[in-house]
Length: 244
Ligand SMILES: [Zn+2]
Image (cartoon, rainbow, N blue to C red):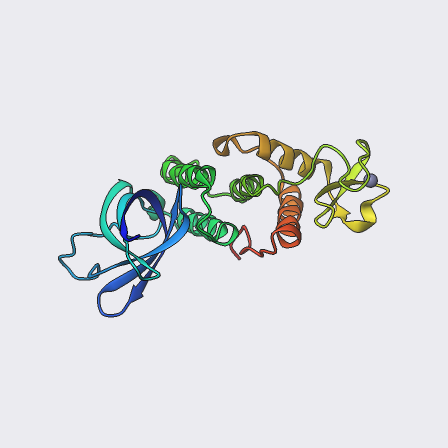
């Protein structure tokens, strides 16, 4: 039945449409990823101002009529994350985070935890800027992806060999097996240094604000572990976690 929907939302993408409109991809707590059209938003005196831009967190009222797209009736800013926009690295991290949510949670299935995680990530990228301590790092992006995997029910098995259950000599990682593998089962995966294994375990277990440190080689291995898990179990290939 047609009617209005009140929801919080993060703008994932904002695309020009026609003369003066925009189509928005939104992530919401209870309607997952959804789309809406904002009419007249590109006119100078639009009542929406500049609020319907990527990475804004908003209170929205959407009209759900008979068409595929809902229509934006109103939008109030909760946070525009202005400091995030002052640094190319933070903007890039925010774009990768939104892209990851968009691809891994592409339906209207509700995942309020994913919405909270995305809001947390955007707030961290915003807060880190200017203080000289940025969260726009490879480690942060990997930790964010690991938490998305956890929310999707796809967290890699890290405590014992994912193939045979052995709890010692865990020296590899296999995306198809779904976690770390022991030296006997390593042929199904690639070598994973202890530091990378510790990073994966630590990042899953700590808040995004306190992502463990790790060297570049360990981070590259952790990155590969996350990418192969996503490819094997979610059939999703994300943009690289690092630019370049
Ligand atoms: Zn094994």
